[in-house]
Amino acid sequence: MAELKDRIRADLTAAMKSRDSLRASTLRMAIAAITNAEVAGKEARELSDDDVVGVLTSESKKRREAAEAFDSGNRPELAEKERAEAAVLAEYLPEPLTEDEVSAIIAAAIATTGAEGPKGIGPVMGVVQPQVRGRADGAAVAAEVRRQLGA
Image 1 (spheres, rainbow, N blue to C red):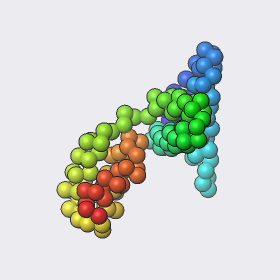
Image 2: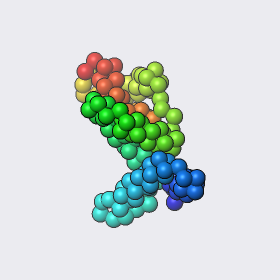
Image 3: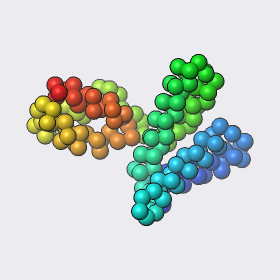
Image 4: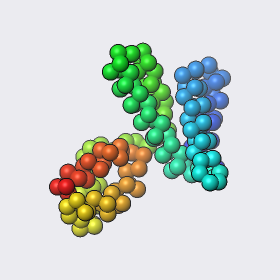
């Protein structure tokens, strides 16, 4: 069983005992998302820690997007709740990469693959994605790959 999933469950129990309702509800949501991912597809499976990080990254991104939507809708109290939930989820995610680190990883991947122009985006992304998964926004990484390749 995934250690990260066990840690989330243990932290949920602790949050419930300390009556931390925000943390408890956020961790319940995370466990539900993990469980849904486990039973999605043709047959149920146990998620690895990397898979759990992927689910948590997705949930965290949903929270950030919801906060932005609430801000633009002039609902600051709901936006703040979404940001607080994202902060709880961030505790379980690996340290995010800086733009400079992402740029360096992409430059190294371009040098390794010898990619040039728009046709090189796929091979470069194939090398970069495993290195940045869960630590950088995929859309931002793809945009930087396009920029560096001049595509």
